[in-house]
Amino acid sequence: MVPGGHAQPHERSAQQVSWPAGGTGHSVPDLRRMVLPAVRSGYRAIESYRCPPDAAPLTVPITVLVGDGDPRVTVEEAGAGALHIDAGTDVHVFPGGDHFYLNEFRETVAELVRLRLGVSAQ
Image (cartoon, rainbow, N blue to C red; front, side, top):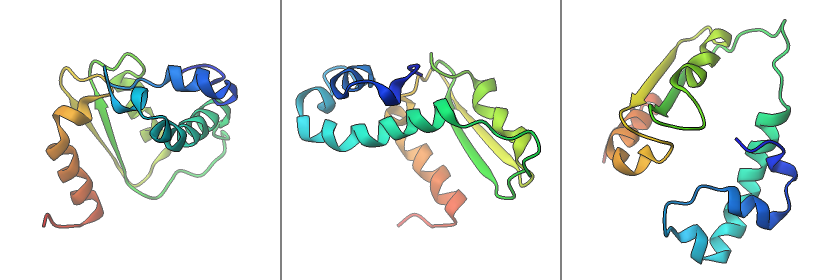
C-alpha cells in the first residue's frame, strides 16, 4: 500500500500502480484513466476506514484470495478480517504468487468466484 495514495497527483498514482511488466497500463492512457479512479478510491478506503471496536460482526461469508509471495500483504493480514465475520471466512492461498497470481491461476480463481456466487460454469 502506498501511504496517502488517494491524495497523490494523478500521474504519481499511475506510476505506483503495479502494472505487469510491459503491461497495457503503461501504454494505453485511456485504460489508465479508467482504472485510476477505482485504485484511488481503494486507497482512500484502506487508509481512512477504522472499524469501530463495538461494531457488530458481518453476517455474510467472505472469501479471501492471496498470493503467498505478495510483498504488500501477508497471508495472516489477508485473513485477519475473519475476526469481524460471523458467517465464515475462506482463505485461499496461491503458491509462489505475488498479487498477480490471478494471471497464473485464472481458472481456479474463476471457479472459486462461481462457487461463492452459486453460479455454474457455462
